[in-house]
Length: 215
Ligand code: C5P
Image 1 (cartoon, protein in one colour):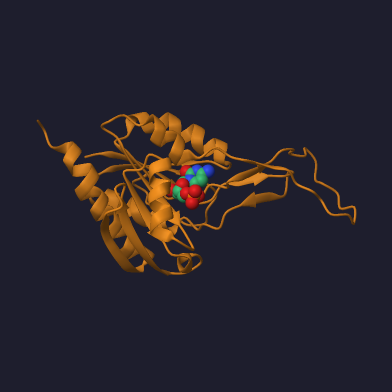
Image 2 (tube, rainbow, N blue to C red):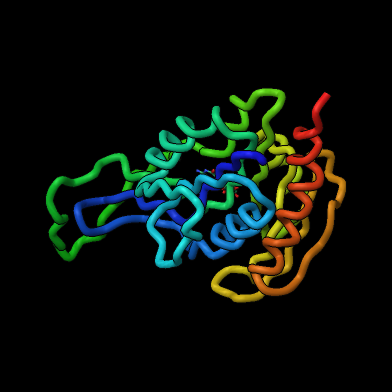
């Protein structure tokens, strides 16, 4: 049995107490991957941004709001885990200034100065022990395979799951699992739930089980 960390859902970067920037993500893939990992007998901890979906009761869920919170919570949990599945869509930008009161409208354009937030998968990937593994996701609209492989390298991922843009806001998806060498480990099409089961089957076979073999 392995302990697996899953980051899931979007994060929020507040501009003021009521307005925020976010990414489009329902958390459905996170739910389905957690169910597949639990069904295979593993222990699952999910660090999730605000979502409306329900995670499986057998998983431990740590709720976070911002990308910085997601990184802090994940960094604390990751050392005790065998691997990380980074399926979250953390918001990549934060406003330089966060107003403590609601920003009032003036009739003039509001200029936002944005900084990049830390990358959760890249940070944990750079800290992983030789016995640990990291799986990232990539959604690309052009040169998809090439860009996904570059992303896997940059973020220290052992495997990367390539999504087509048609997966956003859709029940159906088409994904390709790539190793960090760029080798295809399978293409899966269908509901997000069935794709997640197939993705986890590959993770289990190629990353989890080889580490569980006793010397
Ligand atoms: O760079 P991009 O957002 O396309 O990369 C997607 C992968 O990186 C996903 O696995 C996502 O969970 C992760 N990511 C992250 N922290 C960010 C941005 C992306 O962990 N700030």
